[in-house]
Amino acid sequence: MKVQVKRNAGRKSNATKVTHDEKRLEIISCCAKLFDKAGYHGMSMQMLADEVGLGKPTLYHYFASKADILFAMHQSHLEAINESMDAEAAKTSDPGELLTQACAGALQQISQHPGYVRAFMEHYDDLEGEHREQIRKGRREYFNRITCIIASGIESGEFRKLDPEISALAFVGICNWAYRWYPRMAEKNPPEQMAIQLSQVFLEGLKRPR
Figure 1 (cartoon, rainbow, N blue to C red):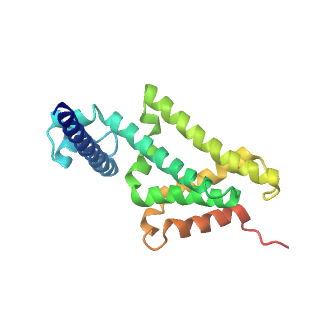
Figure 2: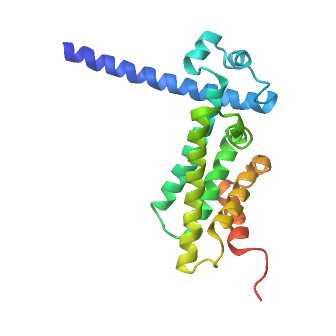
Figure 3: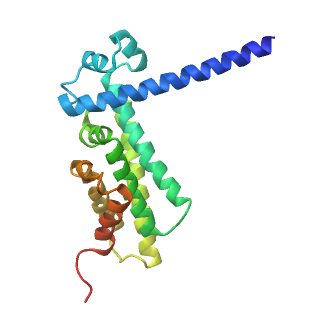
């Protein structure tokens, strides 16, 4: 009988956790929209509580501050683009395909979560202390992954001999800046298709071979 009680309690605990996580995602999503409307500094926790339909004490049960929500957005974006790269790396080692998929992963996030990505691009400087250090480390690790892919392509002879870090800066710049223009084009130009076009510009360049 005692074992059965523990099992039921475990199921109840898991159900509660799912509900808690889902509510956190809803709050983050609403917060991202408010960031777009009012700006990070213009948004208040009261505005967010009203938007989500919660009392402020309940909202604070999920997030202690809007800084915590901003950090969660940064984490979510980094996790998503890295998971996309991991999935492609499990299928191929071709550097061109890996870069194209990295671009597609970034565009996918821009398409599905434009508010998250805007916060990631525009409000990194608003992170403080340990939050900022963790995201700084995550950004550097992502950049290093891109650099290593390009370096491997140079080493194998598939890419020309260029500076891998400068090339990585150019590639990441292409992907990141898309947050300003891609959302309005996403419906007609899905991430995979747009990624092929953008990566082709990077991988092949604009100059016609003589």
